[in-house]
Amino acid sequence: MTQKIEAIIRTEKLHAVKNALSDIGIVGLTVIEVKGRGRGNGMELQWRTGRYVVDLLPRVMISIVLSDENVAATVDAIKTAAYTGEKGDGVIFIYPIENVIRISTGEEGREAISYQGDIDTRKKA
Image (cartoon, rainbow, N blue to C red; front, side, top):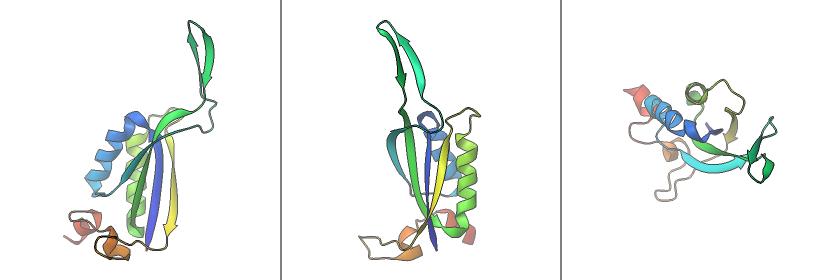
């Protein structure tokens, strides 16, 4: 039925990813500023007072809930737009979602995540 994609990407790639998602019809998303580290050990910086290691780097997490059939296109758009070829480009997690309920209307399931002009309505047109 539905899946949740969480993508943790470089902060400077947010606008490129957001535009790529918009281009394929992804309307609803949540963006959260986060800090973290992955396989790297951070970076060592030199200041007047000495050297220190920054091991929690600023990143952005994008959260999207969408229909199963739109996951591959969405992941591809994120991967393409977020790619720099350097370490730290990010990661994408995909989770199954049991149900979605829109509080304001009481809609559930697919209707609760539908937006006018979104990826699903573009396919029907």
